[in-house]
Length: 393
Image 1 (cartoon, rainbow, N blue to C red):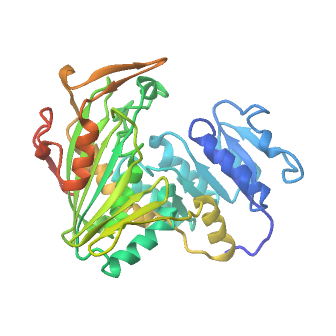
Image 2 (tube, rainbow, N blue to C red):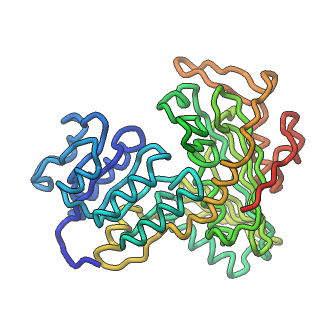
């Protein structure tokens, strides 16, 4: 733990795409005096306009830029590296940072396979660095509030946890980069599927509320993976996790929804239910003998939490060891048969201006039914769903 009051120097690896959100967050924390953007690792340097938030008295030195993270860390002495790069690059970049004594905020999913995850997590730990994984929903103050309700018996005995994610992604989404929509690229695992990347928060949050976050707490995983788009990975999929204590977690997801909706996790109890819209930090409690009760909670930013961990010893919110169960799901998706192409009769084109996309009619209701009943698509009677593929860790 550092006792310095100087802002911690940060290097951002991957500053475009989703990385822009990290750039904006670093600018916010820099204005608060917690960090200083020391470097940007990008294939193309950021323009002055893109770095406009990093001028003034809080930024006496312009951030260095380059393509080589190793060299940037040598020249900047960064204490923290934020990694927001293609999934298949996470492990090597994390280990490079750790060798320089830098700590990490690593975007989700942390790795494309369980083996790569272990190589990353074990290597970072051996180097004496810490790694926070970017599951922002696990920084929500709603999680401990929901856990307290469950422990107090507010909804009786927990019968299972479901999650639903019905999102809309145009065909251009799968062309945004060479690795988008791929299971493998140049012989290297990527595993960029609906459950493992865009709706990964649904999986990790559901596991967290069930209380099974570590790898050894997963007893089995069942997967059903489909694709309406011309991609390798899944865009419409579901998974059911059986935990070592006999719990069930079912997550149903699609990127081909009729109408985009907020993803949520629902905890089913013998005398009620708790629904958590994790992007909104909103919780609805419905239980016998009480009217519905809704609350909205705060959230702790994960980079800020990492800084507070390093400077004053705050507990890290999303260390790698609480991502083990999620990575067992990633591994089950990775090793499952390639996603089944949906017949053309199962989807339709929706041309919305300049953003054409593919829609699976009825999938919104199917996703909701999966979260409600804890059943998979094939068990819900989807005509295009094949028998369940069972994978054990």
